Length: 290
Length: 264
Image: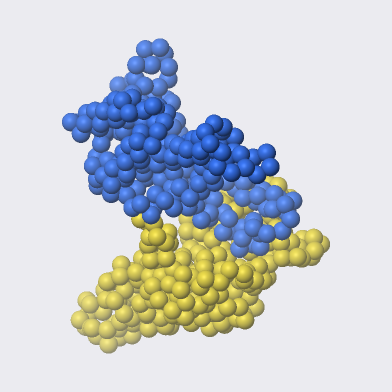
């Protein structure tokens, strides 16, 4: 499902002393089947932006198209439930939304809300719990007995069980250890590749944005500053620094190395292997300098 | 979503904001009592004027206060109508079946409506211009004499400031959970009454779990920072009573005397 924002503005607390313009005339396009990362400084409007995609927030002006669904400003009656079945949303710290007596029941909550039968929902729940790697002996326990990382997996399974075509991730790895982060992100990468899901991820981690996505959108002050392939975005080091963002660690390393050997260029390399290749290339050019 | 103005603090810099919370608390308390002295047009006009002066001095927008009060207008309206039809005396303006509207009833109900509105405006003004922390500090300071009677004034004030402090947090949390459950297809706004009540459970359980967890964390954080209750505790913001506060109290006393003079 293609996602298109056309001149979308969102104002919080309209006509109060707390009025705040979170999105300002935003027009972006997220193609179907892409893995898009949205990066930006705190308060740049990232979360507000993605909450428009499944109609959790409604625009103050402009319109949003998600597949066949259109959300316009000042429109009351909309078929949001059908939209939300297609667009799954993993909120920040999704473990805070768990409430059922058992894990499996909690995962069934989503599908059953969208009219799936109990038997089918249970089947899907088991499938998704397997997918997120939660051992089956835990499935009939209370979700509140789990560790934070496991609770997050349950919450993610609860979103996957609805079988959405688009998944929005709002900092899905906040507060996880490096291994948990890697596992969760690989899971979504795999879903993206295997089922051609469209994934939109809000993140503060530049390496995650660089490694997993094929499109990066940089937000600043409620507006998209730039959008494009990660190689292109992360080559604009100065621009990123200006809006308080960093570049992936591998690139940071390469930049310093290039500085040492007196070269003025940027090499977009996001994985350790790419970085190693780049190092060989750089050092191969200057033999007397190791 | 939560468009309630009562209990909300708007940080501005104005005469009313700078007043000592104690003088504001005492004044509002006295004002609510002397409101009942007003019983004719002149006295009611005085009360309204006092309120308007307060709003002007607080630099608060009229439209903002008006919008916050919209939700209580229905209560005012009901009292107005009840009084309109139930009060007797004076000449009959019109009757409809057993309902009679008399001049007396009309004036009475207008006065009562003014009385309620004036009380609400003044108390709203207090919370709009005084941060919750200031209010509890003021309360604690005013209730200090009760400590002699072994009343846990400090603990009470602490409980109050903690609960006030966490109201916005809880509202935020509620909003977040509503959003998360709505994204999972839960519907709070439509369907039968039974299904709507059932939709509350996925909201309440996480809310309570979160609140208990937060309480534990808070207790631990307070102990870690050496909190041990009232004894020997100093304050970051000392309350200071200035001539402005005396002026405000004088104004209230003057208002009371005026009311006593011109009331029927």
